[in-house]
Image (tube, rainbow, N blue to C red; front, side, top):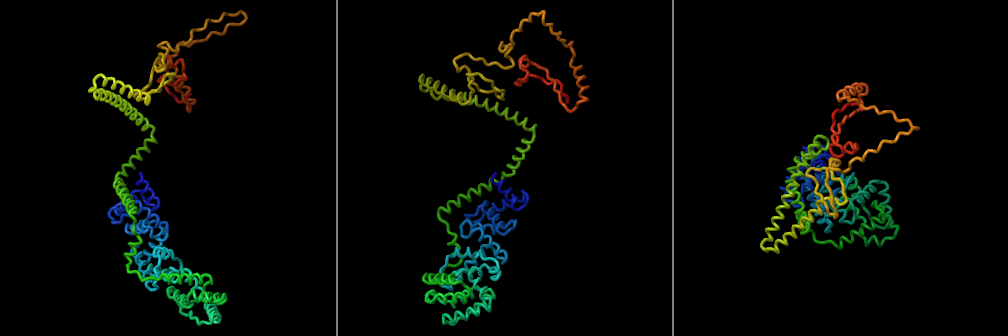
Length: 502
């Protein structure tokens, strides 16, 4: 049922037929089972396909390799869903595989680390890399490695790439930028050179722009020695606010103190480190994968489930089928009741045979055990009738407890109450004494024997005039039915003729 629901959801999300959705799910199940990735399950791949479509605004079937790569990054918690979706977009635009684009981004981060001598949080840097958007991404050519290196270079100098881009836009207001530069030089008594920074901002070379900004502003110690007006002028000259520049210089000073030798690991080693799993992670992943593989195997019977669902729908919508099914269930119930009797008999025999070796005490033990068993069966199954009651007819009958109230009880079919002397009509009342003051009632005219055919002929004549009503003629077949014509228990009447006239 779960697999059938997955096929339904895939069909709905991709707007494809149930057959095509089932084939796609089977393809993903085979891919997960044959991969060497313990994090790969058919459910995970289906979810990855749905998430990629949501991020990218599409409704396509991604390749199994794309889904395996994205699923691993998500399950190992290297990237968020949003970042993984953007990574897949960059890979598609640049003609790379998702795994290849991801490793190239690690290469970019390692290059920035090597140049700056600062070890960065690679996981956070990759997340930021895959969230770069808009003009900034376009200026970097949507190149995964170049974007990652630019983000990492900015972080190594205490900045965010978006802050660098904002400073670059301020520098491109050439007239104001040159004026601000000259004013800062006058106030701080230091020569600035922002020509290369402006050229880098114009061409979208954010690495050079970052380097030039940091070259001109100096370090946090120098900045802290300036007065307020000098700090404001210096920050304004590079297109930044004073607070932003102060925080950036402090961050850079902190990173320089933590500078370490460049990493010896390559990108594959870094990727392995980022995706490492604990023992618990591996255990859970293996259990999930095993469950998924068994589910894929059992998915073979999905067509049978669909067939069963169609049968249920047919039965629920067909009166004739319901009647047939009811009869079949009744026969099954009778068979089960017969089997239950045989089982009880076998149980009694087993009790006595098992206790026979104990002689006479064994017989007593057997009788007690049988009594307890029968009492348990009676209390669990039988209907108590100490207060009387009516038992509806059911296939196979109903087990009932009789005589448990300490007085005699009778079990009589309702149709034979009068025949056995129960519920007889009261004796007729004596005729009233005629009174001379009250005239006698007119005599009752009795039918002189109209037969059924004459009645039917008359009714057919009337039927022609009122054809939209119904009439059912019934013939009684028991005294009970005559005594209580409103009672509908049993077959009290037999339909002799039915018309459309009432």
